[in-house]
Image (cartoon, rainbow, N blue to C red; front, side):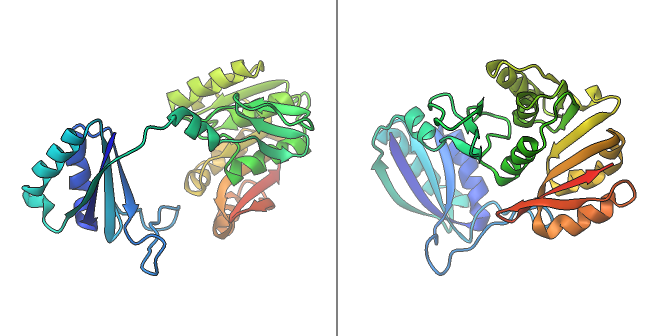
Length: 293
């Protein structure tokens, strides 16, 4: 394969990327041309902050092509376009063949939740101290155990086993929290998500882990649950406050994640008419909030 590297101002990144896609690039990525220098600038996209921009003030646009001729043709065609003004060709170079599957797998190693509870990709052997293991590979749905919000939810489940309880995983993604609830003795688990692909992923992951859950769309959630888990983001969690609280049975527990530390006050206020939220855990700028109803 061959790599075509361009330097573009921020306002040209989208048009250049679209053109490269149209020219049959195998992939297109954008990087900060000033990375690792004093001019490096972050792009923001967290809740409550401005939406992320299309690129940095000086962006590197990198496209992969199957052959050198294809990369050269793309460079030649781009350079004569009006929208190429302000951009420049940096280089075309060969990229060494790699075992991309092995490279991807090397980035995902077993994740310790507690000393005895681990999330382990299928290509790894569980560590000898693991007593509870969830087998999970990275996929289309959120939730592999690597993100601090997921780890905090999993740790909470391990520390508060829902033996014999009815559990709801709202916004289930990969189904990892629902699977953990099953591993720790829950009697009935509904796992719901607005994304049909996530519902399919949760079903497949549960089957692979030989546990029983009921995956479906949010309309499937009915009645009340001893434990309601929702690892989403702060804004939808605020909007869902009345619904999520209504799904918790008296004496049950609500567990919320996907909340930045600076958003804890907003969540406390949003849930105040329904429940008394408190911070139960914190990691890497994120918090886990719980309420007993």
